[in-house]
Image (cartoon, rainbow, N blue to C red; front, top):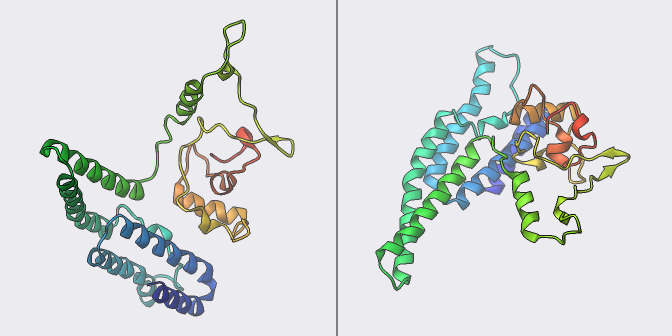
Length: 255
């Protein structure tokens, strides 16, 4: 599979050198998507039908040029791979449902054969496995709009560790944490007031040496296309990709 994708990528990069970077990035994201689905138990027949429908959508770029709708071939769109509203995505998820159920039943049968007790205990693992697999699929296709309870979890963790109180009855947990600084500026570490959105794959925006593959402006545009706006602001590429925004609460972009 890797060799086939490498050949296709090279052919498209040579044919359309102006789209060489975006083409390589698109096929890398496609390979990661397929490997992730295989780890979740997706079969090759189901994945093959999804891949065929995806490629038909990609080929429409050429049809639009032939019909003189656009002057030149457009670059590949990363959103097409995980488009939750696309017909091939809904068809794929429907085809995966029987596979998930069969896998959960097989796990339950295995647990039943290896246990000493009755059937009441054997049903519990199957429900857990089924829920875990379904949640993994939902997490991949839907945007993460949560981010709830992170500050509360850290607070509970500090409370669980405990601390020695002083004469006034205050503990070490009541003391505010030190805020780190970078070059005289506060570094935003408290994520309780952030959007809660997460970049799906940071590596596609960075080179091997940790630098952006494109300019900050272009990186922000691509990140906005992936994550969307929040509070009428674009996402901060330094915070979501490099995790080191030095402007903190003064940043003009959302975190």
